[in-house]
Amino acid sequence: MPAESVAATVAAVPLVDHHVHGALRHAPDRTAFETMLSESDRPTPPWMTQFDSQIGLAIRRWCAPLLDLEPLTSADEYVARRGELGEDEVTRRFLRAGGVERYLVETGFLADAIRTPAEMSQVAGVPADEVVRLESVFEQVAREASSAAAALRAFPDVLADRSKDAVGLKSVVAYRFGFDFDPERPDVADVVAATGAMLAAAGDGAPRVDDPVLLRHLLWTGIDRGLPLQLHTGYGDPDLELHRCDPLLLTRFIKLVEPHGVDLLLLHCYPYQRNAGYLAQVFPHVYFDVGLGINYTGLRSDAVIAESLELAPFAKILYSSDAWGPAELHFLGAHLWRRGMTRALTAWVDDGEASAADAARIASMIGRENAQRVYRLDAR
Ligand SMILES: [Zn+2]
Image (cartoon, rainbow, N blue to C red; front, side):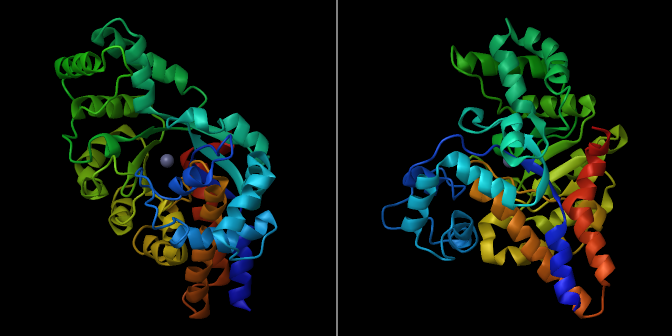
């Protein structure tokens, strides 16, 4: 039966999660756990629970059995069982159940609360490589430098050193400003002035890069470094203004980067996955995924995945979970991706519009091979 063979094939693809963060080190309480089931940073109001959402249903349906509970067990029972097992055991079970063969771990966000790439590798039993966040490196350099000019002089070398074993770089320009920035390399004098202003505003505290001149400088220094560059795109926490994170706003930047031979990876993209598919079709150095959106759309993630398959060549789409924190997210990203891909590909095969061999090839390309090629993982 073709349908069964597609499901089995997709289930067997070992995934490269090309953008993910560490799993929690310590067990969260109920409030903290629920906060991590939403991209909102606002407290959950007392008259609702985040379990009454797509991701909440998905956790009760698909994660509960991995903690020895019945599917769709209550939220109270779920959280109690989680606490009983402890974070190490919960994390071990979820990371090992997702069928991920390699994690590319971005380390730039609240790194103290989560496991390092080496710790992820240990608990999952598979390799984990690092993706380095441009803004975090520069903020550290600026904090330690004696002046704005000194920080800017040191940055390329520090970035090269910090990323010497990394597979890629990442930018959060979407959060810090938006994509409606001047795409050209900024003037040196403007960059020095912007760095000075950032240091003055920080005083003795931690500097934060949010000036578009500086963000552009970081992007172009990243392009000079030559590693694949990930850009958070679309949906995310309320630091960003979503309407300014449509990847189409990057079109002129994408054109300027093209002659430099650096691949750009548009991360997650929801609800702009169709726009990302267009960019991935027309520009040879543009790739995208629909991670993050998959977890939070739960039952409806099959529709998001199907849309991601509309326009882009299959060689330009990658898998990610963008999980940060609870290891449920690391597992669900993989599980829901397999579910959505199986549904899409099964329909094509059943209708005679693709062969079972085509379905297997497409699932393997998106699940692992495209990431292996872009990040040169075979050479590692
Ligand atoms: Zn991320």
